[in-house]
Length: 243
Image (cartoon, rainbow, N blue to C red; front, side):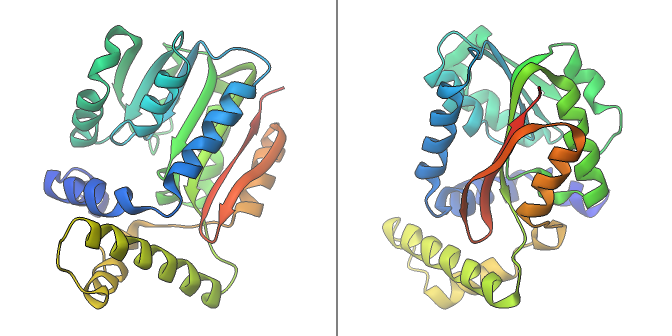
């Protein structure tokens, strides 16, 4: 079992990650609000979507709750994550389908294509675990899974341009984690939270790329209207449209 499998197929780590790390992302609600604004502003209605690396289904739930006529396919390679997604999206019943597939496999898109093509593909804090070459391939695969005029939105952890900017990003997240922890009366000091965050077991799995380069990759693939729609240090929402 490789390091990725040890981390992302471990139920205890996933529970901690979803509760204590992802739950305290700075400006998380604002990021979700931007996604809803963009999705509701698309030229064509979203009748179906694909969530790539769906995790616990937070983006899927966001879209299903705001676009009541659409259906979603939730894709992840981690069964514990899919279990969390099934539980959180159970109120949406037959409007959801769950697909266990690993986009590290070059043929992953074939599984997804059986339910496509899609009006919308979204991904949240997932693809940054891949090498840059894999990222480019996955973005190209997503392009092929979209309908003509379909849109791709990636809410992602991206690279800083300098060590100083990275430290600013870390401090912001640690402050947010500390505030979140204090609200839950965990009793943890900021120093302990900082140590845990900077030495978290999934950190070595991150292969970050800056958002400008990733937008250029999307343009080279053929996406149009490519932009970074939101960015605060290492948190960014970017994407584009298939012509």
